[in-house]
Amino acid sequence: MFDIAAIIINYNSSKLTQECVDSIIEKTPSTLNFQIVVVDNASEKEDYLSLKQFCDTHPFKNLQLVRSKINTGFGGGNMTGFHFSNAQYVAFVNNDTLFLNDCFSILKAAIEKDSSIAVVGGQSFSETGKRMMAFDHFASISKELFGRDFLEKINPKKYPKRKLEYTSPVKVNYVQGSFMLVRTSYFNEVGGFDNNIFLYYEETDLCKRLEKIGKSSYLIPDAKYVHYHGASTPQSIAIKTELKISLLYIIRKHYGYLSFWFLLNYLRINYIFSTLFKPKYGYLLKVLLAGAPLSKSLKVTQKIRE
Picture 1: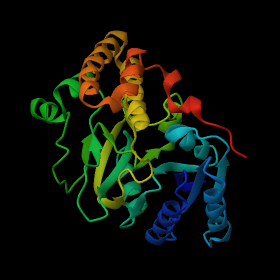
Picture 2: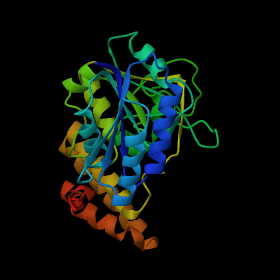
Picture 3: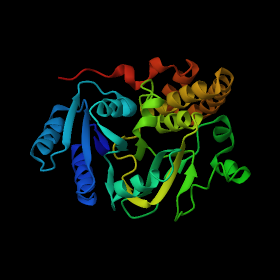
Protein backbone atom coordinates (compact mmCIF):
# COMPACT_ATOMS: atom_id res chain seq x y z
CA MET A 1 0.00 0.00 0.00
CA PHE A 2 1.18 3.50 -0.85
CA ASP A 3 1.14 6.43 1.54
CA ILE A 4 -0.62 8.67 -0.99
CA ALA A 5 -2.36 8.09 -4.31
CA ALA A 6 -2.64 11.19 -6.51
CA ILE A 7 -5.49 11.13 -9.00
CA ILE A 8 -5.42 13.57 -11.91
CA ILE A 9 -8.10 13.93 -14.59
CA ASN A 10 -7.17 14.88 -18.13
CA TYR A 11 -9.70 16.21 -20.60
CA ASN A 12 -8.22 17.63 -23.80
CA SER A 13 -5.45 19.36 -21.86
CA SER A 14 -2.54 16.92 -21.87
CA LYS A 15 0.09 19.67 -21.72
CA LEU A 16 -1.31 20.88 -18.39
CA THR A 17 -1.50 17.31 -17.12
CA GLN A 18 2.12 16.63 -17.99
CA GLU A 19 3.27 19.78 -16.21
CA CYS A 20 1.16 18.86 -13.17
CA VAL A 21 2.64 15.34 -12.98
CA ASP A 22 6.19 16.67 -13.28
CA SER A 23 5.63 19.27 -10.57
CA ILE A 24 4.35 16.62 -8.15
CA ILE A 25 7.31 14.35 -8.78
CA GLU A 26 9.78 17.23 -8.59
CA LYS A 27 8.47 18.56 -5.26
CA THR A 28 7.78 15.23 -3.53
CA PRO A 29 10.76 13.47 -1.92
CA SER A 30 11.52 9.91 -2.96
CA THR A 31 11.19 8.86 0.68
CA LEU A 32 7.42 9.33 0.41
CA ASN A 33 5.79 6.25 -1.08
CA PHE A 34 3.23 7.55 -3.55
CA GLN A 35 1.54 6.69 -6.83
CA ILE A 36 0.00 8.84 -9.56
CA VAL A 37 -3.08 7.71 -11.46
CA VAL A 38 -3.97 9.82 -14.49
CA VAL A 39 -7.49 9.38 -15.84
CA ASP A 40 -8.10 10.45 -19.41
CA ASN A 41 -11.78 11.40 -19.43
CA ALA A 42 -12.51 10.58 -23.10
CA SER A 43 -10.31 13.26 -24.63
CA GLU A 44 -9.84 13.65 -28.37
CA LYS A 45 -7.59 10.95 -29.78
CA GLU A 46 -4.62 13.25 -30.44
CA ASP A 47 -4.64 14.61 -26.89
CA TYR A 48 -4.89 11.15 -25.39
CA LEU A 49 -2.07 9.77 -27.53
CA SER A 50 0.18 12.66 -26.51
CA LEU A 51 -0.54 11.92 -22.87
CA LYS A 52 -0.04 8.19 -23.37
CA GLN A 53 3.40 8.72 -24.86
CA PHE A 54 4.34 10.93 -21.91
CA CYS A 55 3.20 8.36 -19.35
CA ASP A 56 4.67 5.38 -21.18
CA THR A 57 8.13 6.95 -21.34
CA HIS A 58 8.18 8.67 -17.95
CA PRO A 59 10.90 7.40 -15.57
CA PHE A 60 8.59 7.54 -12.52
CA LYS A 61 7.59 3.90 -12.13
CA ASN A 62 4.41 4.48 -10.12
CA LEU A 63 2.67 6.50 -12.85
CA GLN A 64 -0.38 4.87 -14.41
CA LEU A 65 -2.65 6.10 -17.20
CA VAL A 66 -6.28 4.96 -17.35
CA ARG A 67 -8.48 5.69 -20.36
CA SER A 68 -12.21 6.23 -19.91
CA LYS A 69 -14.22 5.89 -23.10
CA ILE A 70 -16.83 8.36 -21.88
CA ASN A 71 -16.48 11.67 -20.07
CA THR A 72 -17.85 11.00 -16.60
CA GLY A 73 -17.13 14.47 -15.20
CA PHE A 74 -15.08 15.47 -12.17
CA GLY A 75 -16.54 13.10 -9.60
CA GLY A 76 -16.94 10.18 -11.97
CA GLY A 77 -13.43 10.61 -13.36
CA ASN A 78 -11.93 10.71 -9.89
CA MET A 79 -13.90 7.62 -8.86
CA THR A 80 -12.51 5.82 -11.92
CA GLY A 81 -8.99 6.70 -10.81
CA PHE A 82 -9.77 5.76 -7.23
CA HIS A 83 -10.48 2.19 -8.34
CA PHE A 84 -6.83 1.93 -9.42
CA SER A 85 -5.43 3.44 -6.23
CA ASN A 86 -4.13 1.67 -3.16
CA ALA A 87 -3.11 4.17 -0.52
CA GLN A 88 -3.80 5.40 2.99
CA TYR A 89 -4.61 8.85 1.64
CA VAL A 90 -5.91 9.90 -1.75
CA ALA A 91 -5.14 13.29 -3.29
CA PHE A 92 -7.48 14.65 -5.94
CA VAL A 93 -5.39 17.07 -7.98
CA ASN A 94 -6.69 19.21 -10.83
CA ASN A 95 -4.45 19.00 -13.86
CA ASP A 96 -4.22 22.80 -13.96
CA THR A 97 -2.21 22.92 -10.73
CA LEU A 98 1.52 23.05 -10.02
CA PHE A 99 3.10 22.25 -6.65
CA LEU A 100 5.26 25.03 -5.21
CA ASN A 101 6.61 22.95 -2.33
CA ASP A 102 6.39 19.47 -0.83
CA CYS A 103 2.60 19.61 -0.48
CA PHE A 104 2.11 15.90 0.09
CA SER A 105 4.45 15.66 3.07
CA ILE A 106 3.01 18.82 4.63
CA LEU A 107 -0.60 17.72 4.24
CA LYS A 108 0.10 14.17 5.36
CA ALA A 109 1.74 15.42 8.54
CA ALA A 110 -1.21 17.73 9.23
CA ILE A 111 -3.95 15.15 8.72
CA GLU A 112 -2.15 12.61 10.90
CA LYS A 113 -2.25 14.94 13.91
CA ASP A 114 -5.97 14.39 14.50
CA SER A 115 -8.00 11.31 13.55
CA SER A 116 -11.16 13.43 13.21
CA ILE A 117 -9.70 15.27 10.21
CA ALA A 118 -10.92 13.77 6.94
CA VAL A 119 -9.81 16.35 4.37
CA VAL A 120 -6.96 18.85 4.09
CA GLY A 121 -6.04 21.29 1.35
CA GLY A 122 -3.25 23.73 0.68
CA GLN A 123 -3.08 27.43 -0.15
CA SER A 124 -3.53 28.18 -3.84
CA PHE A 125 -1.95 30.98 -5.84
CA SER A 126 -2.59 32.34 -9.32
CA GLU A 127 0.03 32.01 -12.03
CA THR A 128 1.05 35.60 -11.22
CA GLY A 129 1.69 34.71 -7.58
CA LYS A 130 -1.48 36.26 -6.17
CA ARG A 131 -2.96 34.41 -3.20
CA MET A 132 -6.34 32.87 -4.04
CA MET A 133 -9.23 31.86 -1.80
CA ALA A 134 -8.57 28.22 -1.03
CA PHE A 135 -11.72 27.22 0.85
CA ASP A 136 -15.41 28.02 0.88
CA HIS A 137 -18.63 27.62 2.85
CA PHE A 138 -21.20 24.92 2.21
CA ALA A 139 -23.88 25.58 -0.38
CA SER A 140 -27.03 26.75 1.40
CA ILE A 141 -30.05 28.98 0.99
CA SER A 142 -28.54 31.62 3.30
CA LYS A 143 -25.32 31.66 1.28
CA GLU A 144 -27.24 32.16 -1.98
CA LEU A 145 -29.51 34.85 -0.56
CA PHE A 146 -27.16 36.84 1.65
CA GLY A 147 -23.68 35.97 0.41
CA ARG A 148 -20.49 34.76 2.03
CA ASP A 149 -19.59 38.05 3.73
CA PHE A 150 -22.85 38.03 5.68
CA LEU A 151 -22.24 34.50 6.94
CA GLU A 152 -18.70 35.39 7.98
CA LYS A 153 -19.93 38.38 9.98
CA ILE A 154 -22.72 36.62 11.89
CA ASN A 155 -20.79 33.42 12.65
CA PRO A 156 -17.04 33.80 12.08
CA LYS A 157 -16.23 30.57 13.91
CA LYS A 158 -18.35 28.44 11.58
CA TYR A 159 -17.56 30.58 8.53
CA PRO A 160 -13.94 31.81 8.68
CA LYS A 161 -13.10 34.71 6.41
CA ARG A 162 -12.03 33.45 3.01
CA LYS A 163 -10.08 36.57 2.08
CA LEU A 164 -7.75 36.52 5.09
CA GLU A 165 -4.19 35.24 4.82
CA TYR A 166 -3.71 32.35 7.24
CA THR A 167 -0.39 31.20 8.67
CA SER A 168 -1.65 28.23 10.66
CA PRO A 169 -4.24 25.47 10.03
CA VAL A 170 -7.87 26.58 10.10
CA LYS A 171 -11.03 24.48 10.22
CA VAL A 172 -13.27 25.17 7.23
CA ASN A 173 -16.45 23.86 5.66
CA TYR A 174 -14.56 22.52 2.67
CA VAL A 175 -11.34 23.05 0.74
CA GLN A 176 -11.28 23.69 -2.98
CA GLY A 177 -11.51 20.64 -5.19
CA SER A 178 -8.54 21.83 -7.21
CA PHE A 179 -6.38 19.99 -4.67
CA MET A 180 -7.60 18.05 -1.67
CA LEU A 181 -6.07 15.21 0.34
CA VAL A 182 -8.60 12.80 1.84
CA ARG A 183 -8.25 10.01 4.37
CA THR A 184 -9.16 6.93 2.34
CA SER A 185 -11.01 5.11 5.13
CA TYR A 186 -13.43 8.03 5.60
CA PHE A 187 -13.77 8.51 1.85
CA ASN A 188 -14.83 4.87 1.64
CA GLU A 189 -17.22 5.23 4.57
CA VAL A 190 -19.30 7.95 2.89
CA GLY A 191 -19.15 6.35 -0.55
CA GLY A 192 -16.76 8.73 -2.28
CA PHE A 193 -17.94 11.29 -4.81
CA ASP A 194 -21.58 11.38 -5.87
CA ASN A 195 -21.60 10.26 -9.50
CA ASN A 196 -24.92 12.00 -10.09
CA ILE A 197 -22.96 15.27 -10.17
CA PHE A 198 -21.19 15.81 -13.48
CA LEU A 199 -19.43 19.07 -12.66
CA TYR A 200 -19.26 21.50 -9.70
CA TYR A 201 -20.11 21.12 -6.00
CA GLU A 202 -18.54 17.66 -5.75
CA GLU A 203 -16.19 18.72 -2.94
CA THR A 204 -19.02 20.57 -1.17
CA ASP A 205 -21.14 17.44 -1.19
CA LEU A 206 -18.28 15.19 -0.09
CA CYS A 207 -17.23 17.38 2.84
CA LYS A 208 -20.86 17.88 3.88
CA ARG A 209 -21.34 14.12 4.10
CA LEU A 210 -18.09 13.76 6.02
CA GLU A 211 -19.21 16.45 8.45
CA LYS A 212 -22.40 14.47 9.10
CA ILE A 213 -20.29 11.59 10.45
CA GLY A 214 -18.24 13.94 12.61
CA LYS A 215 -15.23 14.46 10.35
CA SER A 216 -13.71 17.83 9.55
CA SER A 217 -11.83 19.68 6.82
CA TYR A 218 -8.83 21.97 7.26
CA LEU A 219 -6.89 24.51 5.24
CA ILE A 220 -3.15 23.93 5.70
CA PRO A 221 -1.55 27.15 4.42
CA ASP A 222 2.02 25.85 4.53
CA ALA A 223 1.25 23.63 1.52
CA LYS A 224 1.38 25.92 -1.51
CA TYR A 225 0.42 25.39 -5.13
CA VAL A 226 -0.45 27.29 -8.30
CA HIS A 227 -3.92 26.89 -9.74
CA TYR A 228 -4.58 28.10 -13.28
CA HIS A 229 -8.19 28.78 -12.31
CA GLY A 230 -10.64 27.67 -14.99
CA ALA A 231 -7.94 26.55 -17.42
CA SER A 232 -9.31 23.02 -17.57
CA THR A 233 -12.98 24.07 -17.86
CA PRO A 234 -13.72 26.86 -20.39
CA GLN A 235 -16.76 28.92 -19.43
CA SER A 236 -19.97 28.89 -21.47
CA ILE A 237 -23.74 29.07 -20.97
CA ALA A 238 -23.77 25.27 -20.90
CA ILE A 239 -21.22 25.29 -18.07
CA LYS A 240 -23.15 27.98 -16.17
CA THR A 241 -26.28 25.87 -16.56
CA GLU A 242 -24.43 22.85 -15.22
CA LEU A 243 -23.42 24.91 -12.20
CA LYS A 244 -27.06 25.65 -11.36
CA ILE A 245 -28.17 22.07 -11.94
CA SER A 246 -25.52 20.83 -9.51
CA LEU A 247 -26.30 23.53 -6.95
CA LEU A 248 -30.00 22.72 -6.91
CA TYR A 249 -29.28 18.99 -6.71
CA ILE A 250 -27.05 19.59 -3.66
CA ILE A 251 -29.63 21.81 -1.97
CA ARG A 252 -32.35 19.20 -2.40
CA LYS A 253 -30.06 16.38 -1.28
CA HIS A 254 -28.90 18.04 1.94
CA TYR A 255 -31.72 20.44 2.86
CA GLY A 256 -34.89 18.92 1.42
CA TYR A 257 -37.55 19.74 -1.15
CA LEU A 258 -38.80 23.01 0.36
CA SER A 259 -35.33 24.56 0.24
CA PHE A 260 -34.89 23.26 -3.30
CA TRP A 261 -38.25 24.69 -4.37
CA PHE A 262 -37.49 28.07 -2.78
CA LEU A 263 -34.08 28.41 -4.42
CA LEU A 264 -35.34 27.17 -7.78
CA ASN A 265 -38.01 29.87 -7.90
CA TYR A 266 -35.57 32.50 -6.64
CA LEU A 267 -33.24 31.65 -9.53
CA ARG A 268 -36.11 31.57 -12.01
CA ILE A 269 -37.10 35.12 -11.09
CA ASN A 270 -33.48 36.32 -11.29
CA TYR A 271 -32.91 34.82 -14.71
CA ILE A 272 -36.22 36.02 -16.12
CA PHE A 273 -34.92 39.56 -15.61
CA SER A 274 -31.36 38.68 -16.64
CA THR A 275 -32.58 37.21 -19.92
CA LEU A 276 -34.35 40.45 -20.78
CA PHE A 277 -30.98 42.21 -20.88
CA LYS A 278 -28.80 39.23 -21.83
CA PRO A 279 -30.69 36.90 -24.17
CA LYS A 280 -27.79 34.41 -23.99
CA TYR A 281 -29.23 33.27 -20.64
CA GLY A 282 -32.32 31.99 -22.41
CA TYR A 283 -31.20 28.38 -22.34
CA LEU A 284 -30.32 28.54 -18.64
CA LEU A 285 -33.75 30.01 -17.89
CA LYS A 286 -35.40 27.26 -19.92
CA VAL A 287 -33.63 24.60 -17.84
CA LEU A 288 -34.65 26.33 -14.60
CA LEU A 289 -38.26 26.51 -15.73
CA ALA A 290 -38.08 22.77 -16.39
CA GLY A 291 -36.97 22.26 -12.79
CA ALA A 292 -33.21 21.92 -13.45
CA PRO A 293 -33.39 18.11 -13.61
CA LEU A 294 -30.29 15.94 -13.88
CA SER A 295 -31.62 14.86 -17.27
CA LYS A 296 -30.52 18.30 -18.53
CA SER A 297 -26.97 17.77 -17.31
CA LEU A 298 -24.04 17.62 -19.71
CA LYS A 299 -23.49 14.12 -18.40
CA VAL A 300 -26.31 12.73 -20.53
CA THR A 301 -24.89 14.28 -23.72
CA GLN A 302 -21.53 12.51 -23.55
CA LYS A 303 -20.57 10.12 -26.34
CA ILE A 304 -18.46 6.99 -26.12
CA ARG A 305 -15.05 7.34 -27.77
CA GLU A 306 -12.85 4.62 -29.18
